[in-house]
Length: 410
Image 1: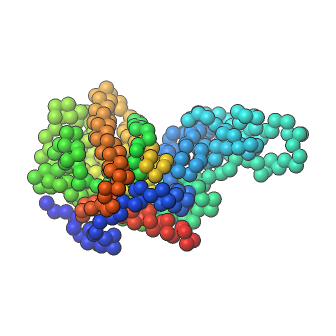
Image 2 (image 1 turned 180 degrees about the vertical axis):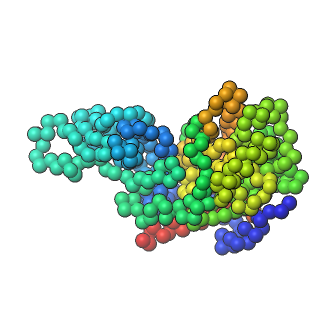
Image 3 (image 1 turned 135 degrees about the horizontal axis):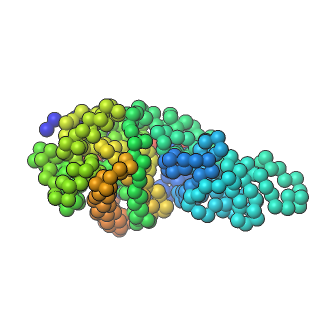
């Protein structure tokens, strides 16, 4: 098998080859550094713009790591803005629902009113306030920007980088990907997991475990006689962001239900077949940055958008994973699978099969990562041993540490 993997590893020798410390996964003090110098200072993906298509449409997000509740709203000018979900009167929570559409926001506490641009428009009993300055009592804005329909926030009042600067070469790599073709979404939420947020991300950015932990759900999909350990095809870094390409076993034998689903569309778990091949060819023409190794047995690209988001670029669909830190050993994990809107019942069957299979695979990861967190907290081990194909874990730990150090001296 021809792969670029060894070359990619050699080109990143600065990441080291020895064991790595468990401390970043269990240290309360390190978690507080991540809160103050990483999550409050970085661009964070929170939603898709098509969730709020019309003026007045809004969503709210609870960002525990920043100790913040956020309103994201599309204004009458079609611009998307973000604000702290806090009334200027006595800091009451302004909006208590997850989504909606309205022309103004009215505080449930004392009925102070704000427009879609965040300006204060109504004060109950305003004549009883002394020297109230409406202009300085609007909603507190949060830096907000978009890339390819992805909404990002930054809690730094004056971000040191624009979103474009933050994404850097990663945006060039992803250029042309047909995000807008996949408008049907399935949401998977496991709630609060007992694990550090980095441990959760680690489970999705290495392929070494695929043939073992997932031997029931992914048998022969990403491993085979030519690649028994599911070694990746390529590894790329773009500043703190990274990409690995996974190998597809061309000899994978699909089960009866999977075969049927493939007749009707390219599912999220299928890696071979005529439908898959045709979808791949179209995808590479649109987004030539994918599959940088140009390997004929490419399955998908795993993309880590620093610090907490993973985007799986898959022919015919894509998934987005959020890993939101709550405490040092609690993480809120959400996954979203995006597909083209099914036009026939057969396409819906293909989509539902793919999502159900995906849910089964992820369930195996969740069980394992929670046990691993408990084991790390036991103190039984002080170090983690990483092999070559787990280089993304090294890169992520280094990127987190580098970002914290840079912010602390800024």
